Image 1 (cartoon, rainbow, N blue to C red):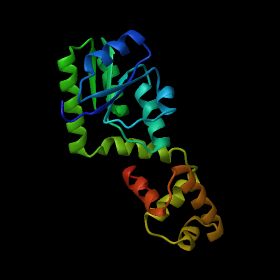
Image 2: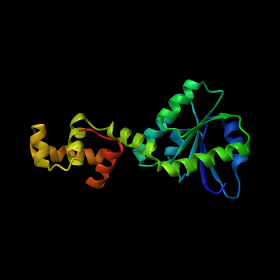
Image 3: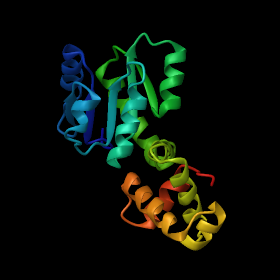
Image 4: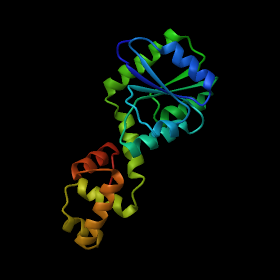
Length: 200
């Protein structure tokens, strides 16, 4: 399993978590188990892939937390006897793959490796888009409009004219927008807008 070196496992069931950690711990794979998304967010270790037990909304919650942190890890969800609706929902929420538990250790390793390769080939495109959208969802309507103007290359004065507000007010919205996005520079905010396919 050459492509994965750090695996994060999120599962509230201690027996299942221990079984996965035991089955996957090898010389080339470091497994870090967590009980919940909240426990993970207190630490944010480096991860090549996250394996999460998919309780309803778990993938969406993890994506939102990654957006806050600026982290981007491929997510593989799993559950015991999941319905097809549940699988589709998790994948639409951002999971790159969905596994049914229990699964033999060698099949699990292969599935995680495939997910990692697929994620690397796609450049985390879908995941980055979901994270960018989650970041932009934190903005007010006016801040999104200002971001749209910035992403279109408009100056504060032109954005102000377009929105019928003063350049100084644009500056204030722009500073708030950068702060909420965790962007150090305007270029970071533009990248987020592009990844989220923001329309101003």
